[in-house]
Structures are given as structure tokens and as C-alpha cells.
Amino acid sequence: MSVKDDALKFAINAHDGQVRKSEKDKPMIIHPYSVGKILEEYGCDDNVVAAGYLHDVIEDTKYTYDDINKIFGKDIADLVMSASEPDKSLSWEERKQYMIDQTRDLPLRNKYILIADKINNLEDLYLLNEKNGKKDFSNFNRGEESQKWYYHNIYQSLINNEDENLPIFKRLKKDIDLVFDKQENKISAYYVGNEEYYKKVKELDARLTELQNLKKIITLDKPYVIESTGTPRTGKTSTLEDLSDFYKKGGFKVNYVKEFTTSKKYKEELQEKYNKLSSNEKYLKILEEIEKELKSAIKTNADIIIIDRSINDRQVWNYLNYINGNFDEETYTKLRDKYQKISQKLIDYLLVTKTNANEAIKRDYLAHASIRPRTFLTEENVNKYNNSLESVDNLLKNSVNTYFKMDTTNTNLADERLKVIESTAKDLRKKYINKFNEDIKIRKK
Image 1 (cartoon, rainbow, N blue to C red):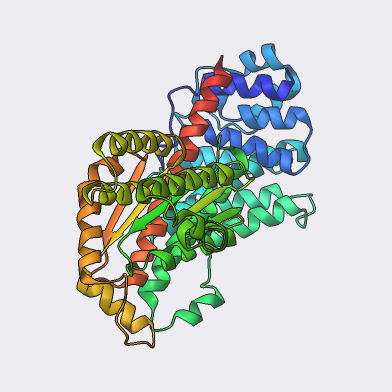
Image 2: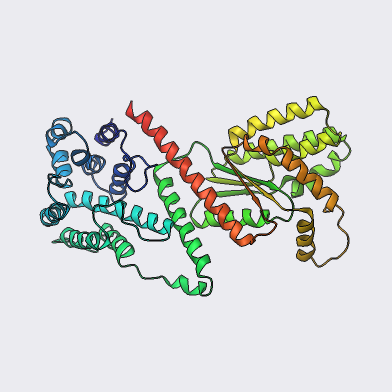
């Protein structure tokens, strides 16, 4: 293994069991790991990157300078030591002043580790504050003003005798300004009169940036799959379109798969052929195609797959067909169990939207110019669908990792869409962190 790999493995074991002070669901090692990746991003040599992984070992674990020197050599040990605070028996102010003073004349290689450390801490703090909708320094030994004093002064020490226009210095300066001297951006002018909505979308944007950062250091085993099902005219399709747009704007590759039975392929290639089959055979064919479509989508290079009515939607229709006599009990049970297993393996998140028949029909009339009677969207059909949806509720809950259900009968659909986006972002964040923990366990061996 390279010195970087050895250093990372050592740091993983040294920080075992430690967690981030501000976000306790994140293991501590995610910080040194991110610092090392920042140093790699800016082209630092292997010893500097290795020291980035190890930069908190002397300060926060049982290991000493002598331990690092013995295992990794003097260069890396010196790099780590210069990024470590002195004896913690000293006051916070004394320790920080020491770092400000001793940083001023360090070689640039040593400074890079301190810069990357500050960048990662500041960017995490900024995103945490944005997600919470307020500044919060309660996890630190000192409040905002003291932290501001330290970061401004350590920045001045870091740029001493250096070119402050180096990209890494500019990034650090931007981060300090964002956390401590941030001015409202121009975009806020577009939300005058809609300040609460602006607050919510700002929080969502912070979640998106956090996901972008996690994606840089963590690779999931498969795309994150979101499926949606529910009563017609509940805002489901608009929500999926907003979801797709949200993640695309965040740089994620999104594959948005629309409802199969309304697709061009189904209408032009398959519908006429399927209509000649018995009801039993027809629905079995549709199920086969939807399964094939899902598996094909997962094989793409997408980060996120959003599917409008897929495996779990067919579970609703399967039950409806069963109680209508189109499936016998044996066929229904086999299909139910088969597609639950497929869902458990492939689908991460299920969105279920619901409204009553009267509201669904009213929204349909208001969405179109025609006042002619509807052939499918009738009170009888919507009630049958809703009853089927409720009957398989527990089945659906047990078919996915995350189940999100919302009744949109008396709600603002725009607000509901934001709730769904937030829910998926939190769930995807959890998935990244779980995968990171799995990877760390492998690297520990």
C-alpha cells in the first residue's frame, strides 16, 4: 500500500468510535478523510496527504509524535505536529494564540494541512447552520465572536509571506466570509413577500451541497431509487419533476422514468397486443415489462433514479385486480411476494400520495378546459383505488427502506413538495453515511 493508504488505515483505527461534535451520526474519521481529499484536490504530495489523514491523531487520540515518527518518518510526523494544538491544559485562548503565532512562518506544505482542516470545518459549519436556519456555535468551546477572531487571525498567519491568490487560500477566505461575514445574496430579492418559502429552499440548498460533498468521497453500490405511487391528482407528477430538477441542479445524474402504462412504448408497441390477452395475462405482461424497465434503469450510470409508478404501484393494482376477480389467490400471493422482494432489493424510497375522490376529480376539472365526464377518473374508481392503497399499506411499508406518505387533500402542494425533497435528501444523506461506515470497516482490516 502507499503511504497515503497506510496513513488512512492508521487514522481510521486511531479514531475508532469517535464522532463529529456537531453531527454525531457522522464518524470522526470523515473529517480527516475529507481533509486528505482536499489536499489531493490541490495537488499536494503524498506525505502531505498522509499527514492530512493523520492531522488529528496526536491531538485527539492516544498516539504521540514519537509514534507517528516511528511508523511514518520524521517528515510526516513534523507535518502532523505543526497542525496539532499544544497541551490542552492551556486555555482555549492560549491554544489558539499559539497556533496563530507558530503558523506564521511555517513552510507552505505545512500550511496546506491547516488550510484544508479549516476549509472542511468551516464548510461543514456553514452547511449545518444553513440546514438549521440559524447560526449555532453551541458545539464549540467559544461562541461566534471568539471563533471569528480566531479564523480571521489564523488566515492572516497562513497568508504571511505567501500568495493569497492561490486557489486554496481564496477558498478559505470565501468560507470565512460565508460563516462570519456573509451578506445576503442577490437571489433573495426574487423572494420578497415569500420569505418563509425562501428560508425553506435555502435549507434545502444546504442539504444539496452536503450531498454533493458526500458524493465526492463516497460511492454508492447502486443508484438511489425513488418510486412514487398514489391517487391521481395529488401533485405526484409535479413533485417528481421538482425532485428531478432539484438533484440535476446539484450535479447529480438523474434518470427520470415516467409511468409505463402511459409511455410511448406501451401505447404504440404493446397496448394493442396486450388487450388481446386475458386480464390475468395482460397484467402479468405489464409487471414483467415494469420489472425489466426498473432493472434496465439501475444499470445506467445515473446517481438517482426517479420512477413514476413502478413495482409498488403494481402491488396496489395487483390487489385491486385480485379483489375484482382478475387474479386467483395463488397468483396474487406469488406476485405479491415476488415483487416485494424485488422492491426490497432495488427501491430505496417510496413516496405515496393520497387525496379523496372529490378532491381528485375537482383538481382534474380545474386542470383542464373540458367539462365532459371522465371515463376513468370517476368517484367509484378513485374510491376503489384508495381502498386498495390502504389495504396494501403495510405491504408497501415493508417493501422499501424509507416510506413517505402524505395526504394532500387540504394542503398547499408547493409546501408538500418541499417536504418530500427534504425527506429524500435526509434519506440519501443517511445512505451515504452508512456506506462510508461500511467502507471504513473494510479499510480497518
